[in-house]
Structure formats: C-alpha cells, structure tokens
Length: 85
Image (cartoon, helix red, strand yellow):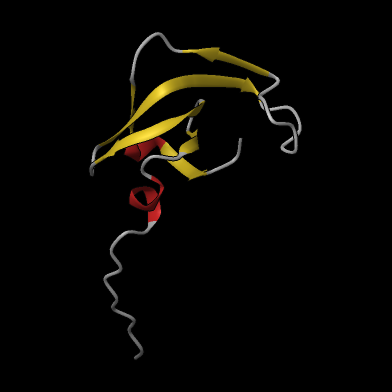
C-alpha cells in the first residue's frame, strides 16, 4: 500500500487571501476580494453575485450585481475557486 501524507501550509483558499477571487458554488457564482478564511466560511469584500460570466477573456462579467456589504460564503457550498476576472 502506498500513502501520501503531506501537510502543505498556505495552499488553497488561504493562498488567495487578498486577491479578487471567483467562487463557483452549488447555486451561485460569487466574486470579490477574499479577506477571511476559516473552516466554515470565507469573507468577501466588494462582493458580487455573477449571473452571466460572458467570455472568460473579457475583463468584466457580462451580468453581475454588487452586494451591499461584505459577504460570507459557506465553504461547504464551494465547488471550485480561483482568480478569474
């Protein structure tokens, strides 16, 4: 049996702290500056809900609505994430 056991600090969401990220979640797509991460939630500032991404090569979302305050997203709902726009 082969096992790989490695504890890598500073990867995943933690590595993206301070960056503008896109979170593909079970129902919605969120975008904003990632300012907080824990095991249950992430915190976004300057957050938006993205309704239509448009082309990924475009600098802005085709259709997105700004959220009025900082926004918290449950990590259990995040399917994928990264820097996109």
